[in-house]
Length: 254
Image (cartoon, rainbow, N blue to C red; front, side):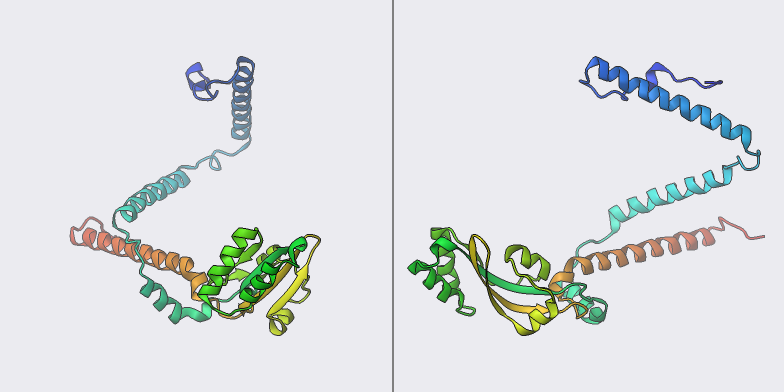
């Protein structure tokens, strides 16, 4: 194309190994066609742009400089950045900045039973329901877990994990039109669908726009702390390099 050539050697690696011959030919033709189109459009652009507009030497130099600095900084961070963050550091940051961590959704802690409708009259179901209504009893939870495994009904134990309210409703088919009203007025709910009876108990909740709990923010805070260290390390490096250049008189201002 004009004075540009595409050599056979440049097509190596374009066609994936093991491709059937017809597909290999199509892939090569597609690459060649794209290359030709690019060269034709490039020449057309060069003909229709003023010479000064086509001078990208400053932009290319700035781009190269950015790439070199970025590559060096990446290697420096890889070698010297401390990425270990203790729980006490996370807790301290959270306590100092708790106002910055606001919930965007309602969250809950909950437990539930899911019992097939054809089993609800069975004696073990009454026992399971009684155990379910027992608050914070490890022995009761263990016994209920064994019952659920033996009789194959669903059970989610009470734990310390916060869950989005909408996520909870994917497990328990609640029809809730106002989450805030529901959370303010109900802790226990019993619902049915075509196959199951559900017992739900919400053990704790937090409304959106309230302070997000530490357990939900730990990873976020860890990333913030590491990012701060990263910025501090890079700033320190830049200052040290600048001071060294000044002491060695490696630059002059006229």
